[in-house]
Image (tube, rainbow, N blue to C red; front, side, top):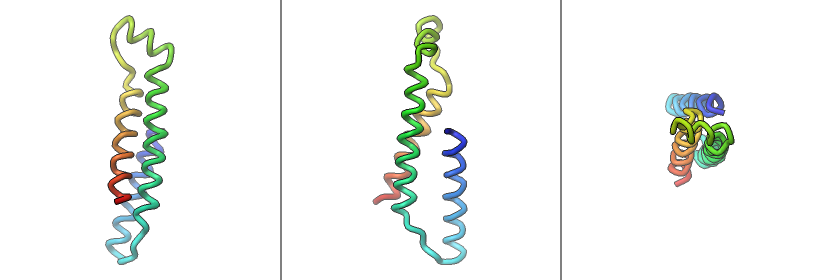
Length: 88
């Protein structure tokens, strides 16, 4: 899931560079909607990892949260915020 989000960010940057060089405008609302959907899915995936039974046992014993959960939730939030800014 993280790889998909990273690939989407690279594609968006390539599209922006192409727009700047050719003068062709791509619809920012479509990109924004895609980022919001991908961000919500990524955040949900991170929360599912955070709420998994194995994660709960690890948190109870050592107090540590899996890094995948943090990456999913924070990465999803960032994608949603970037997507919402593109929708304006």
